[in-house]
Amino acid sequence: MAQRRREIGIRRVLGATVSSIVRTLSSDLAVLLLVACVVAAPLAYVLLDAWLQTYVVRVSLEGWSALGIGGSVFVFVLATVAMQAVQAASIDPAATLRSE
Image 1: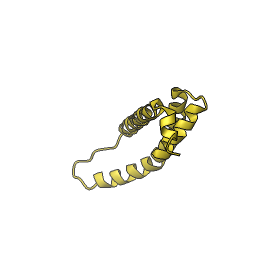
Image 2 (image 1 turned 90 degrees about the vertical axis):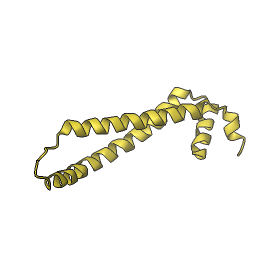
Image 3 (image 1 turned 30 degrees about the horizontal axis):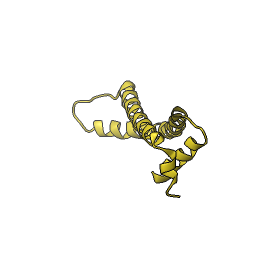
């Protein structure tokens, strides 16, 4: 995290706004999250379906529930990253670069 703070400090010194820093960090993470969801969703579906077949009362898996869970995780992670980025970008850049 210290290296990220220094990177944010350098970006601030070079004239980047807080919103552009948040957008850059969030977009990088959004791509990783989408790839993780695409990889994990089929695997989770297969495993959950096999597990649910062991019960006497059968419950079918719906696609909207997986989308809802994935969407809520996506929003929660992006909100957390945005909050941390705003906090790091609000710090005086000289304070973060002074230790170098």
